[in-house]
Image 1 (spheres, rainbow, N blue to C red):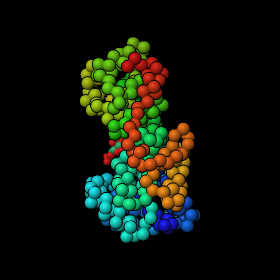
Image 2 (cartoon, rainbow, N blue to C red; image 1 turned 60 degrees about the horizontal axis):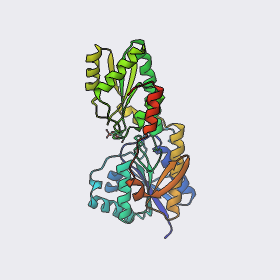
Image 3 (cartoon, helix red, strand yellow; image 1 turned 45 degrees about the horizontal axis):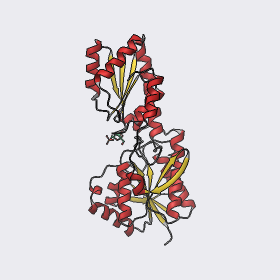
Image 4 (tube, rainbow, N blue to C red; image 1 turned 180 degrees about the horizontal axis):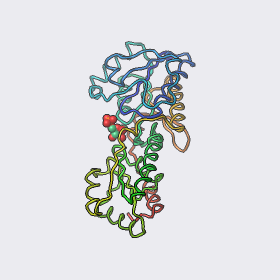
Length: 325
Ligand code: F6P
């Protein structure tokens, strides 16, 4: 059966670049003669039947915007088999032959579940966390890293003026990629990630080492999943140092903002790629990129891969920042 109608949804945490993907999928879909529908608020909207047709014009002026015009949600009901069957039935009843799902791990697992209910779904990796093993980059990671670097630059100015130590807490859930990449780019003296446990005494030894080298201001990039509570860590270090320690939790700032050039390009390319797959009658696939090459693979296979932390890169960061961790 020829694909005629496709739908797009974004689910889970939003990520800069999602709008670029929506825009490209809508415009390329229409160019290919398809009707394209947008499901609002992710799987929650699918269960509520919240869907409308999108036009060329409806995706104007969004490529540069963060967030997602389709809006998003985290939906507990869709985690159940019953919810998934209901979502699939809604799509079938509305004549949707293909679905593009943009989101992170949980969202793409939802797409896989829909495939098991007979829906042709294609996934686009959209999360700032970069925690999907099968692809080198996810949509939004680059922009989030740039946002963090901008913050680190600003914090560096004031911290070094006051000879202070600053802990910068970054997102990433259980993945240390944002911390690692921004720790490298921001020249952090210490990078704390979930994948490597660093004892408190090691942190203190490194700060002492910095002082011995005449460095009185340091940046510690702390991933949210690294096993330290930011304020507790700040207080413990301050107690040992006799004050002069500040902490900044960047939080949801990292999720917003105009997407970087890379995220606009990834979103646009994956939007087109997903439509091509559906147009060719292919579902059950996820889009990715590795070494500058775009590819697609089986959704189940991709999602079952285990993310590996780049220990070599971490070591490189240590050497370059002259750390002894
Ligand atoms: O997965 C993206 C992410 O921003 C994580 O880095 C963070 O742990 C989580 O979402 C925050 O979720 P929420 O927006 O529901 O607070």
